[in-house]
Length: 340
Image (cartoon, rainbow, N blue to C red):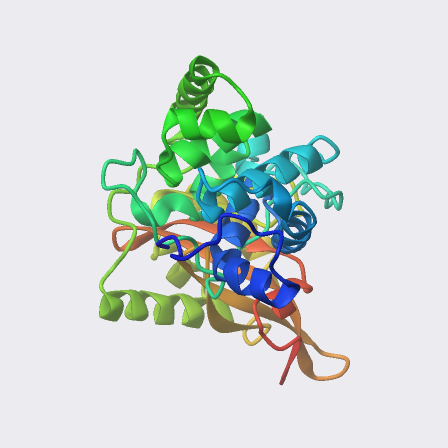
């Protein structure tokens, strides 16, 4: 987003309406930034509100030597770092433990706030990307990339986002974090090294994650049909050999067609499952996804179950992550129930 022109050097004399007119255009990219830092949509929304409130209360500290955008990012980033001191690290099952086997019992759900959340595509990220960035432009909000960010300590996370996603210079990042330039460069090196170790496991190296619209539409139609008719073989035919599958807050995850097939046969598609599930299309983290609904046979409707996010590598699915949280239906502006 280009910086607005005609920003007054002194914000002290602005009223709240005038101040809001200057800051509101930055809301969406700040929300995406806070989501990358915090991994939770609601926390990101709250943090943007807190950023704007703090900016208003401290508007006399704004110095025209920096842009208004940079000043807001500085406030938001440090607010996130303060919040992360009190919060557990978030992640996905694939980033927290080894793959499970079918012989192991399915563990109980972990309901503490340790899981990343999906990010609705109607909350777009910043449109600013460097052609020389180390990451694909669309990867800045993709689920695998956000998962990798949360392997990093918070300050390394902030440095990598500011340098490699937003393409800020080292001295600009040092100013935001009140660190030296050498310390910023060192943190960036450590962050990149950590991510490099996890690129394959987290599917960070998909070279063609985006299909042509018509091809993608066909694959998604096959996926919906397989899921709604409990067609295990149809589902597996869409997966890569080493595809992964998880359903947080259940902490286990599974790799490979054989393991995924065995799991869904005995659980999700177990018994008379034809018609048990309904899917509504959505998008999350710049990826195709679905609102997932499960039949409630007692009252003959479908209750919201969660949000499913698909990661493609070429023409095949390399990861299915189902966020089992009915509250996400509202976040994605999907109905909470569907008629049977």
